[in-house]
Length: 352
Image 1 (cartoon, rainbow, N blue to C red):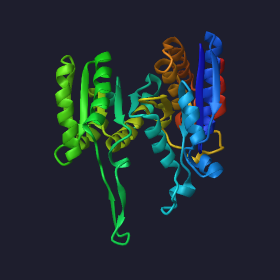
Image 2 (tube, rainbow, N blue to C red):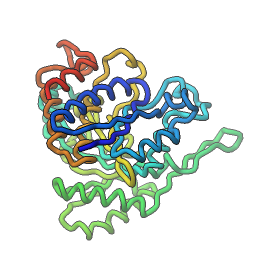
Image 3 (cartoon, helix red, strand yellow):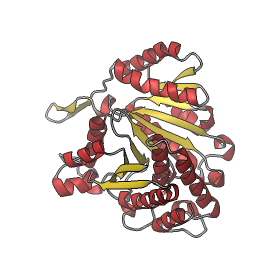
């Protein structure tokens, strides 16, 4: 099979972890007789520096022509520390999601038996955790009208959702629940927010179409608490953009490192696969960043974008093996030897 993949490395550690995922993808392609055509494109701060735009039209064209997008990370301190900056790397991410129609972010959270003790939570609370969030990506407060008034002393960000936006995300959640344990949780703040009440009533209306799915409705603050108490009580959770952004980062530490969890953003056009961590600018160029989340995102890409489950499982299996034998970066090594980012990538590619 010929696989056309857009490669958006981005900023910070993005290029370093992407390089390792490319090594692994190329090794899998060679093993199973596939041809990968990689097409690199600029995004984030790197794109601003080069062309003044965080998601250039040229990058969008490459993404639209690709079968899938493998994405690193964006963000740079020079923009984070400048509140007056008119153009920001993160604007490119939002623009990309909107233009590619990436309305559903799929973020799994699971544990690795060999890393249970790395989690800040007790073994008995997290063992067996295997949940997935579906976060709505193109609506809500991030895309609502925003601005300043009263000579800049008052700021506002409007949160807006349409019923259609809720339906398309919720249906993805119901379908995923049907393929798993037939259990779905709708996360909202319906006791306070009108948009949450729209979410809740819309999901309630959809229940009749999926009678086998047991649906619960929980406030976002309660879910935030239960995620660190009994995360394995959840299976599929659906929620809006802001709540999903916060809860998925909270859930990511259950596994023991933010460098372990993959994600996919799916929707109307080309799907995108990326690690959940940020650009980690402090580690840029040091060859210490954990590449496993990016490698596991590549596994999701093989399965979800191309239907190549055997190839995806091969990647996941070699990642499990690397964790078992301790070929890991410093965030997971403890008192044992810490491998460089590039060394982990080489080991994975050589041991497939």
